[in-house]
Length: 265
Length: 323
Ligand SMILES: Nc1ncnc2c1ncn2[C@@H]1O[C@H](COP(=O)(O)OP(=O)(O)OP(=O)(O)O)[C@@H](O)[C@H]1O
Ligand SMILES: [Mg+2]
Image (cartoon, rainbow over all chains, first blue to last red; front, side, top):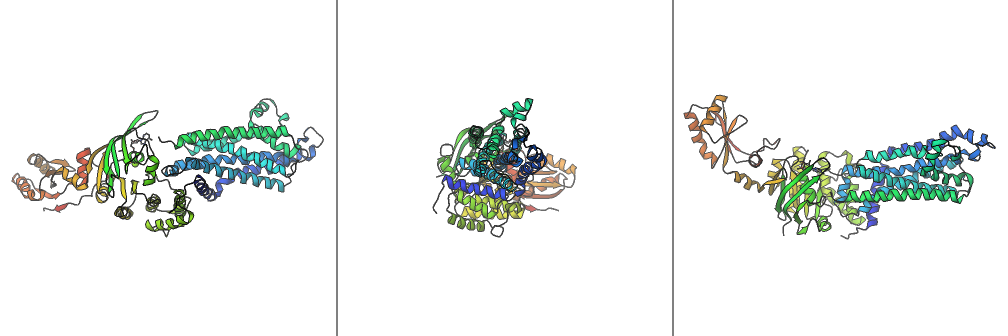
């Protein structure tokens, strides 16, 4: 029989297998989706009236009359943290011994590592896409037009891959799915030490300092710029730079740790 | 050419807390087309040996080759030739048996069409056709082991490594798997399997090595090993402890074991009458006596100094009841 062991076939087969795994336990996907939707609905309901329409003309009119536009990036950033599932998928395979089975076969180690990253990326795109759709449905309306949605999605994707890399590195290093799970705790500082509910100028004291060092801040601000203010190229650039740097660093860490994991003991 | 040639391999694990010599010195040779058994208790170093031979673990020292290919320098080539079913089976519970076979075929490089064909063949071979569309989660232990065996056969390997293929299975399922393994051997596949069951080593392995604390302590066919003990084992039971005690003075070569006396002699059955005569002359009443060929159990006791857990009832002795 003919034999085709190309890297791409292997990556595709392994990715498909992992997609099947995800699809067959859909409940595992829900929490993150719900939290993201929560930001959208609850914070819009709770704060929208204050910072949105009724604040027009006051110093609190930072949402430019549409609080959905303002809060949507937070939802999206929260949805993109679902990229962290990559590490959990990979570690599950290590724990179950599936990883070892693959190692005993002539499979590219990069295909083994990249497959969960692919699925993490798909998750980010789907969840963020879904949240964007809901957002549009309940009134989000980017200041720069619909192209704004794509900019937000692209930032979410890069940011999500950063978390994917982080979770793979943490998971492989700790060798347990708890290790990878722990990565998702980054969620809290990432979201709450940032200009989540008000712009950075309104933050006070230590929170302002923390936010300045939190890369999430720049990602959210980048997204917000197209949603609320219009084309602010330097803000947008800082957003992409921040997301990309984070992703490059964590993906490098992931590659190094995965390399170690696939070496013989 | 030898299927497997292992010369003084050794594996030392160095962890922060301790240094473990998991495999101290293991050598054995396996001819093509035979079933070779590695028999040993928990922690003997069986899995570590298998992992080294299947190129999944580095060797601390020593040399080994598979079909003449060095496992360290030619590990890629070795993987092409071997099939592996490890002890901690990595089976994806969320997929169906069919999906697992198909995925594995694709990963080995078969085209979609060939993968479909091979999947059906293998499902049939390991008797999982009926269960093909069920998720592996719902498979019994025996079915999972057969699935695992099937997955290791996807690329038609010449040499198959099976680490404890039947541990935890009931006797019926075990026998099904044995038949499967024998059939593979009859089709020319060389099989190296590990086991902690004397009966399995006895029944299945053409040749075997007993491994204990990281060392090979005996090697040969089951018959050779039994013969190496020399003669037959005669076992005497007595009515009471006093007779047992007195008998020990008469049969001074005998070993006491579980309230019985055992003695190893040439041509045991022929010598029973004279033993009984001697005992009777001393007023000792023998309640039962049996002569049997030494079992692997006896061999194990001889070479390691202890019995393998749960190994009772494996002898096929010719019992002579004296009432
Ligand atoms: N990665 C490791 N690090 C440290 N020690 C190890 C490692 N793997 C195995 N050992 C030790 O090496 C010894 C042999 O283990 P091994 O798994 O080879 O035994 P085994 O014969 O397969 O036993 P079992 O029948 O229980 O499967 C044990 O003492 C074990 O604790
Ligand atoms: Mg073992």
